[in-house]
Length: 398
Ligand code: HEC
Image 1: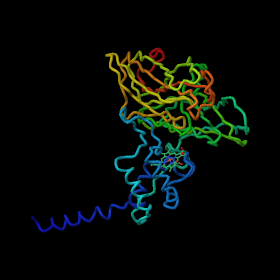
Image 2 (image 1 turned 60 degrees about the vertical axis):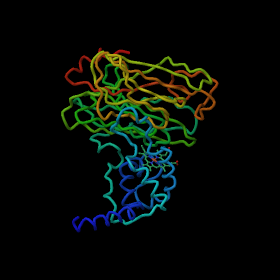
Image 3 (image 1 turned 120 degrees about the vertical axis):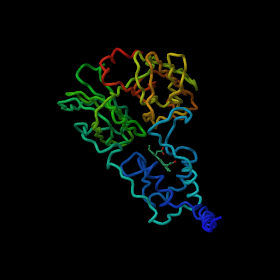
Image 4 (image 1 turned 180 degrees about the vertical axis):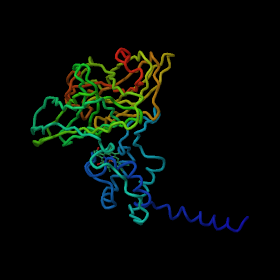
């Protein structure tokens, strides 16, 4: 044995003792930067910032509880199915570190250990937008009552086609905007409107991979579909959309498709009502993302692919659907769907009195825009090679 080895063992023996107590700057700050500050910083969806020690310390107990229950970071998919590039879950050992830090009295440690502050685009969760469109004027939201959907047109004045790589819809006042969708109207009629991006509780930005983008044709108008909800106080909102254009040549056009059941009818009192819908791909396409949409009776949602060879694969499973979190789930690796693949969606609803969010368990519930109505939409983001895109309109059938 060389003499040096002995002292190395001794040193290794000491490290675990000093390292056993995680400190804010050394151990916790990097986790918060990576997993929490996207939402927990000024101007974002979460109610408090978790950036400095002073901001974080009072929340230590709540942080411990929220990571143990899995409430934070908010991420619903069953980990057995699919790998997603926008996965918010904690990495190996991170939960244990957060808990050990709180249990040790949430010490600050040495500021010299702190990582560099995380860099965010001020006011956005996407990169700095190349262009921002906003509603032409503020909308007055009354204190009470039901507010009809508002459809607000904003011309782009684009003189050439634009490829959108990232898009984010930002409400002016989150407490008034129930959800917002921005669609592209390229002048060929209402039925040809195409989904661009949306805001729903929990926020969801659209970020596609380099080479993938949504097309906004020259001369298009953006239509903001605004669903406002009265919150007891009169208020005003002016929602915006930020767009980042593709900087690289685009090989795949991203198209939004919907798997849905417009005829759903949920019986009164039923605690576990199943609704199915499906869509067959008539051409070979790549699936890049999925998003489930239901209202407050929604309980669970699953996407499956049934391949032409008869095999079935679960693509995304949300065992406990939460109306407050409706992000797009982007696949780490796009999934090739050969022509003839059927995408099946299964949703369950709880229309019983045991559902604390149920506004009325004694009624039949049908499709409709308001929260006391229901919806069943499995959104798909499909990548279609730009070269064969012209054949697409006829390529997909319900
Ligand atoms: C996608 C956005 C998002 C991310 C990422 C996120 N949070 Fe939150 N967080 C929220 C929102 C919104 C709320 C308030 C609404 C709620 O409590 O559901 C919240 C609430 C909380 C609360 C208060 C919970 C309570 O029970 O009152 C804690 C503590 C918290 N977050 C900790 C964290 C920690 C720690 C992380 C990272 C490990 C994290 N959050 C990641 C959005 C986020």
